[in-house]
Every structure is written in C-alpha cells, then in structure tokens.
Length: 393
Image 1 (cartoon, rainbow, N blue to C red):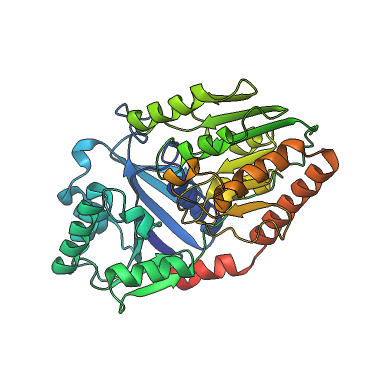
Image 2: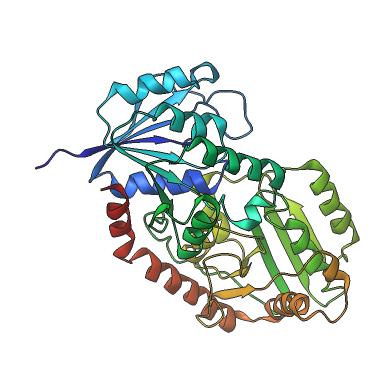
C-alpha cells in the first residue's frame, strides 16, 4: 500500500468551533470523506469565532489527534506568527498546503508568506470571498488588498479551489485570467437524517433561518417580506438561529419585528450547535433564507437532508427548486423596492409565503419528499470525491 500524502491546512476556525458556519463544516466534511486517502494536519485558532476564551479541554500549541488521519494544531494568539508557521511547515514533509480563505491576515496571508520557498503544491480556497456581492461589503479595503497581493505576487504558483463554475469566473476576474483553478464541489455531511414527519395544517407556518444576523444573509429583507403578509388569516412563526453580527443592523430588524401584525411572531433563538442543526430543522416547515449570495450554503443542503423544503434567493448554487418540488429560489430586489406596491419580484416572495401558509399536509409532504430526493442525488454523486482527487494530486 502506497504511503498517504500529507496535507497541511490553515483555517481560521475548526471544530469544536461552530460559530463561523460554512467554512468549518466544509473542512470537517472534507477530512471526514478523504481521511482514507490522505493524512490531514490542520492549523487553526484555539478559540471559536468572536470568542477570546480558548476551547475547554483542548491542548494548545501542539499537535492533537482529532480523528483517524486528522491532527489539529490549536494556536494561541502568540503562536499565530510567521516564524511559528515556518516551523510548522518544516515539521513534516508535507505534499500539499491548503489555505482556506482570502482576507484573513493570520490564516490566509501569513501562511502564504511562510510558504514562499515551499516546493510542494499550494492551494487557496476562495470560499466565495471573491464574488462581487462579497467584495461589495467593505469593498474599498478588499479592492486595495487584491491590488496589493497582485503587486506582491503572493499567489505565484498557487492553485485555486472553486466549488462551482461561477466561483471559478470570480477568481479569474479578480486574480487574473491565467490563474489555475480546479473545481471541486463541497462535500456533504455523512449520513441522511431519519425521516421525520411534521404536521402541516392550513393557516399555520413554522419558518426558520440558520445564518448570522447580517446584511449578507438578508435578515431584514426576510422580515420585510413577512410584513407584506399583513393581517392575513393564520399564524406564522419565524425563528432566527444565528449570531447577531452587527448590532445596528439588528436594531433595524427589531424595528420591523415590532411593526409586524400579531399573527406573525419572530424570535431570535441564539446559536445552534453544529451537531444539532438537522434535528432542529425538522421542527420547522421551511428554511427561509433570502441570502444575497452563498458560495455553497451548507444549511440549505442540511435542510434537504432533514427532509425540509427551502425558500431562498437565486444567489446560491441551489437552483430549479420549484421544478424539483423541493422549494423556491426567487430573485431579489433592493430594500427600497420592498415598499413599492406591485413590484413583481417582491410579490413573488409574499405569494410563496402565503401559499406555504395555506398549504395542507398532502402538498407539504410532497415538498419534504422532494427535498430528500434532492439531498440523495447530491450526496450520492461519485464526482464529488473525484473532484478532490484532481485538486489534491
């Protein structure tokens, strides 16, 4: 049996952390699927996203056996330095170094500087950070950064990891047409949840959002769409699970929540542990997430795997949902347009919400079955693992 290749990974946050959302799940799924083919060494922070206290029971600044074929080095703040990374890179004969993300000084830029003389393969995963919708958030700083890295030739000899054709185009546009890009879609969490039926009566609707409360996730837009239902006959519950990322933005959300009619209840439920996401989804009828853009959208796939339809924007890779009877992917309009009567795109959101509110058990069960079929088709695709073999070889 040939010796397994050693893959060194730099990522801001990893398990047991979960507050950073998608990137953590992407990496956890990747090492779980590919551990029989490669040995993974993950360098990450010893704290969760936005936290300062180190993980309880986790040893910092040394390699820790995390799972078969997976070791993790949880760095304290002092250890997140160029000299420390150079030592780690030299500590083993690594075949590939994989850098997750674009803008992080500690875990994207410093590792690339430390890798200047590295002879093996260097991979950078852009994780949707080069999409125009992502660049527009703090756009001035990001555009300046991208000019700087080109000038410094920081991506010389780097292979970029894209999860779809659109992301490949984003990389080529921002980094350069000659950039080497390999497409490998995100790997799903292993194992479908056991089928769980949920009662659906006409005039009741349980919605949830599993995303941070932020402009990128379009929480305010979702609330304004609900407001358009008005004093409609029926009870709507919309539970928000996610970190309040921006207090001023949350205050805008609260203003709309306070204006909603009494039949529509919105509750912020805090954060869900990553291992309980699927189970949580199964208590609701629909995932409601009109995000401005998702590179992948793990919670969307987890909703399908939990057997629940989704109501999302058309700014994700998950398309043609209505045709496949597993949800809706609708176009977005600006917040200003939400107040304008007769805007067709906006009307579509409220029409679908009204349709869901009036929906009865038989129609709902068809959507749930469609969701499971969509998940099964994705998770059973043999091309997923082959994409990573092309990327890492």
